[in-house]
Length: 289
Image (cartoon, rainbow, N blue to C red):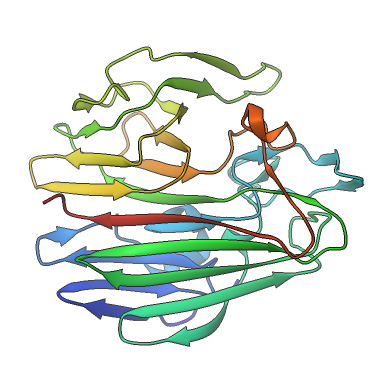
C-alpha cells in the first residue's frame, strides 16, 4: 500500500479523516467534544494498519491457518501482517487499496474487488465500505458479495480503537464469552467471568483481554474522565481486545467467532454466501444522549 492524502467528510460538527488506499482505514473521527476514535495518521497507518482509528475486516475476522481447506476449495494462504501473526489475519480489506466510488461532504463510498486476493483466499468476492456522518456520529457499513461460481464462507468485522485511561469503564450486555484458540490450544466457551458484559459499567482488567462476547445486545457505552462514547451495531458478537498497559482498547463488532470461521454458522462460524449473495455489518459511533 502507498501513502495518499486523507479524504475528509463532515456534517453538523462531526468530522472524519479517511484513507481508502491504506486499507480503507479511518484515521480519525471527532465532534465538538473531542475524539470519537483514537487518532491515526497516514504515515503511521502506511507503516502498520494497526495504527489506525478503525479498519475493516473482510472477508473474515481473526486468524486463519495458512492451509485452507473448505467449501470445495484448497489453498495455501499468506500471512497478511507478518509482524502481528504468522497466520492469515483479518482478511484482505485492511491490507488492500480501496477504490473510491463516491465522495460528498458527509459520505464516502469505496470498494475492493478481489478475484485474486492478497491473502490467497480462494474465492472471488467484492466488498464495499460506506462511511457516513449522520445524527451526530460516524456510521461505517461493510458489505460483502460473493462473486464466485460456488458458495463461499463469509465474515465481516470492524476494528475500532478507543482511548483508554485509568478511569475507563465500559458497559454492555452479553450472554457468554468465547476465548479464541491460541497456538495448539482449542478455543473455549464459558459463562461471564467478570462484571464486563453484564450490563453495568465495568473497568478493564490489568491483564491483556482478548475475548469475544456472545449475544451482544447492540450497544456499548465507554466512559472516562473526559466524557462518554457510544458504540452501536447489529453484530451478534462483540470482540474486546485490551492489551495490558496500552493507552487504547478495541470493541469490535464481528459476524463470526475467531477461530471458528469454517465451522457451521449455527455454532458461531462463517455465513455461507451463495453466488451473487451479499451480507452486511455496520458500526455507529457517537455520544450517548
